[in-house]
Length: 488
Ligand code: AMP
Ligand code: ZN
Image 1: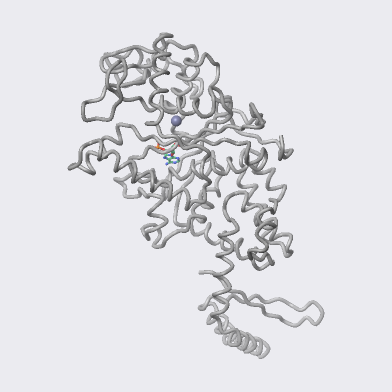
Image 2: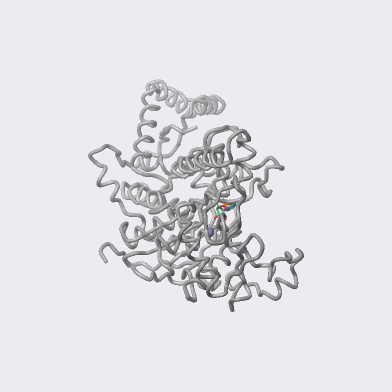
């Protein structure tokens, strides 16, 4: 081990329903898998949540175990019935395979642009399901041989009653599920919860030849195979949104453990809470369905475009396990806070010139903040430490603030360099002589107790984003007025 830092990470493990100290299988290769998008549509802001939350975890793991010692896999599901349906609708005049190619390429590209704008690092690997079909066929054969799967009509299904502890992640018992199942068990299924490993495709549908005929894999199988191929049969952390616990993750566990004769697939299962919009579940019919791209590029939400870093902070202001109500108010709040933090970094004297780059990029986060972050990503603790440094008065505070925000992926050298240039430009455009003479005029008015004039001058300056701050000279007791430029 090279750059390991001595700090314990604690994570809430959905599998044991406890917060546990994280112990990687191999400190030289800490392995994380997160279910990525199904590329049939532009990603919505709900999809942004796991991307951001697990990016923060990835950054924390890299910080603690060293950049070279963490492997993060986030897949792309590029074969799925939703893709087929959407491709037919969107490109009715194209052959289905071409329509699918066009749709998946377009949405994948957009997803990459979105997560980049949200300041997420690239995962170490980003496998596409269609690149792993051979592995999927192999796993199905394995499951059929062990009698965990059976052929039924046009499908190969996993037999959930063939294993002891189906339901342990989602805490369901099989009997209960069947007795309580409102949906009648399909005729061809042995159990209501049996799920598709392989299904036959029509001639024009996407498919691959197999001994069971031309067909395509089930969604759950894809993640079992891709994670094993890139991370091994048992790895450290598996993540995704809370909606995936059942059936997706339950089924991944069932397949992987059965195929590989293991008790476990991953040691820690992490799930982010759900996101709703302005108090309601996001849905197209309610008209509150909003894509990441729309937030970044259009003025549909709250009448303005929102920057990626603001969106990222808006998401991180709530602990990852809790639900989020995404709202204009939340975005505005995030914008105000982030603006203040970035301003403070500059005001307190960090200078983002090239010659300082190396030194600045090596700045460390605040150690208390790090403890809060390592404590199951306790963002409320993290944010209070950020506020504390932003309230400080020393260069040291600017350094800690930058180091901490950098660890969280909320700023980097380039973003701050731009910010500093923007601020300098705004300052250059100001008539400083005029501002100072107005301030003097106001001080005079105060002396003369002409309060209405003093207030008027303050308001005039506020209109051009100049904020006044009054204080008293410690020795003379005289009023001093300082000004600063507020970002809009
Ligand atoms: P999908 O493309 O629907 O499979 O979702 C990709 C990822 O986004 C999964 O980890 C989902 O759990 C997550 N996700 C989808 N909708 C939401 C939401 N409204 N809030 C939080 N996470 C979500
Ligand atoms: Zn998955």
